[in-house]
Length: 302
Image 1 (cartoon, rainbow, N blue to C red):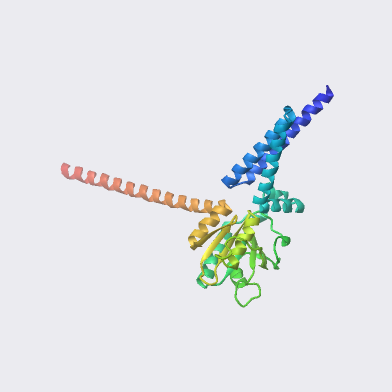
Image 2: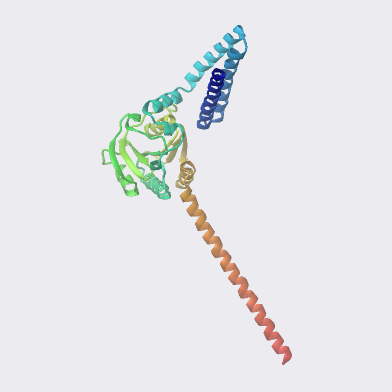
């Protein structure tokens, strides 16, 4: 009896772990087409397990195993970047990144968005090339770059960012790494993307390369030739964009509730002041009407 209880408990734990692992994979996949491929692959694996465990069908089992093997090789080719990133995270012990729970050091404030937008706008006006990597939870480390650059560890400010990208400084050619409200390093050399080599310059390829490997970071690009602004996220580049559009994208990607809350509170204050003014005007009109009525009654009596 104890033996069968142990077998049932083991089977239950097996199913629970498999379901938990599947839910973790589904939660990390954001692209719809990739989600469909993952569902189909997991369905084939589950079907092969069911046939091997509960049905004695040797030929069918061999065929399904062959299909699963072929799909595994195809997915390994399609998702080689994602699988490489998964092995890197497991090897470095960054499980919090896999679980999608970034530490507090990656949480930016409304001031961060304002300073990034202001800096990008000024650099764009002066046609000064820039590359700003904002870590939102990927926990980027020196080994993730081709060259880790020079450690800064300073409070984020517009003046400091502009000075780091000055043309007469040795750090202006690399990227600046920002985590939360701090500048971590400057002069960072990023891995280049292989897509759009003939369309984009080195800065744009570097922005695509880092966001392809790490979905928890974004990269702001300022073109040195034209001064146009661009934003790279998850291996996709949106360009050209204005400063207002950059601000909208940063609020959406960073998910800064403080910034939105401040705008809502200011809107509520404006609405309440408008309501107060309207109530005052209504009360003034009512008082004037009562005063006119009293004067007309006095004239009639006289």
